[in-house]
Length: 183
Image (cartoon, rainbow, N blue to C red; front, side, top):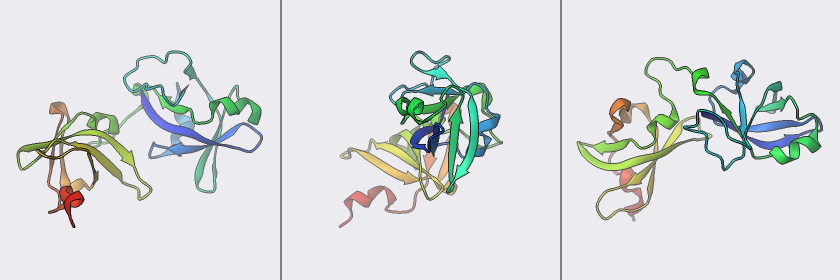
């Protein structure tokens, strides 16, 4: 399954939620069948079906509110009924997803080994969307004498992706991976 958004805040009295979107085009939500609502701690990334307390959900309404997606669901008629679902995650089944040539899903990057000039330097833990409209690649630094995570902006020209082999070749600008060591 694919994580689409989190129900960020209840909006008004009609059981609507403002979304914290993870998907690129939330306006496509009304077209998606088989939506699943799950508690925030439940990871459905590799799930075939949604175990309880996750539940199938159907969109009742979609609109924009001050540049944020706002949704309402069947069976959640008002603010009182929506309270228990605040913060929950909205997922969609894998078969609903499609990509253009050369595109990939964020979850496909997880666990990929990262190489610079043929030397393995890290492993991708996740991709986080940013407000600047690009993803941040979060990498576990595996270089000798290093610990922790490195945040690397996804600039297409820096990355060569080989998903079948779970390999990423990175050509970062000089010093990018050493920002924590600069005085």
